[in-house]
Amino acid sequence: MYTLGPEEKATLVMAYTQTGLLRGEVVTRDSVRINTWLRTDGAPDYIHFFKVQWLHASAGTIKSLAYNELLLPVSQMIGFHAVPPSDEPLDYNPREDNRINKPVEVVMGLFVVKGSVRTSAQTDLVTSLQITHSPWLSVYEAEISSIYLPQMPPLQISMMLVRPMQVAFIPQSDIAG
Image (cartoon, rainbow, N blue to C red; front, top):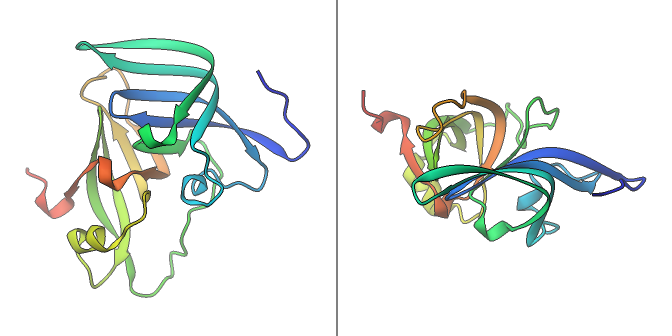
């Protein structure tokens, strides 16, 4: 396991891959904001999880696995957030001029996220995604659910990160019925 140093904290997080979901603790410096950690120069190549619960889809079934420790390459992650309730601040000022939250659905592996992305008021989602080259994108007021795990109630998250090049976006105006 681990022993926290004087300037460290343990945070319970969830990480999504194309084939599953991991829930576990990560240890970071006190000053690290989990909501923006993966977008910083200090982001690791591997996330070192402790006390891991892993729901993994394989051969048409979903298996629950548990590990004391697990190292997951960040390159395999398609979504990431702190487990609620989290007191992490959002990564924007709501009074920013010319920026608005636009509703969207994100298909993220086994999960669907209903939320919003922050874009220019003058730009549609397609244009915004085309000009944003960040490996991670924030989704706000996210509701995460899965048709593959009907027993899992929808999870409400104030902010999460998704990897835009590995998920699919459905603009709210294009959602059928």
